[in-house]
Amino acid sequence: MHSRRLLIPTVAAAAAAVLLLSGCVDNTTGGGEPATDASAPTIAVDEAAAALLPADIADSGKLVVGTDAAYAPNEFKDADGNPIGWDVDLVDALGAKLGLEVQYEIASFDKIIPSITGGTMDMGMSSFTDNAERQKQVDFVDYYSAGIQWAAPAGKTVDPDDACGLKVAVQATTYEHTDELPAKSQACVDAGKPAIQITPFDTQDAAANAVVLGQADAMSADSPVTGYAISQTDGKLEAAGEVFDSAPYGFPVEKGSELAAAVQTAMQSLIDDGTYGDILAEWGVESGGVDTIEINAGT
Image (cartoon, rainbow, N blue to C red; front, side, top):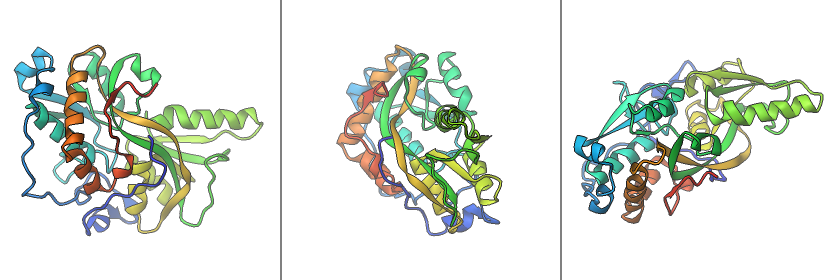
């Protein structure tokens, strides 16, 4: 999460109308994705990257990718329940570079890494923050930088550095839920102040809706996600404080797998030929783009 400013993606003009249901955010339906350019050039296979693939994946001809598809605009679902978002566009392009068919498996966020270590998924794609704790289980191919951004009801002053006693909504098992808010809450308790009421939800749109409906005082999420939520609530939410705590997003793969090098090489090829930048720009999240793809850069 290396972005220092709020990221709001460019979306189709009808997006807000589609996603606003009685003033709430619904990231399970379509309408938020940019129009596809039918004339976009076909992505050629990068033979050097494909040659690095583990034999079993190369022989299968497919890349099984786990995603929770509930974190718009990074990865969410269209009206038919299919994954969409800028992360999805990147992985589709990655698959093309590797000469593989991408097979998406939708699963809860906390089940993806265990599925990779258990051998039923090849890679994860759910805005995973690369950190030391997760690196004990998997390797990360880091491809984007984002920060944490809070949002609150419009007109309400909320300071992320002084949120003691407030109810703060998050998506369950995200970094904000497991690391950021517990640390902030403990600091409150240590200072003799009320703890933060950490309120997790299964999906990010539910967390945003809780703030819109007055069921929580604020929400915390990755900067592109908060920016998207703000853009979809017709002025009901606004940014609270600045973007902070930068760290990289990474695609998790089995620890020690040759797949990491293959993905790294293919993603770097997407950067070098401009495809990566075009995808980020189409979604309006280019401020978090990187120039070099690294492995386990979160530490």
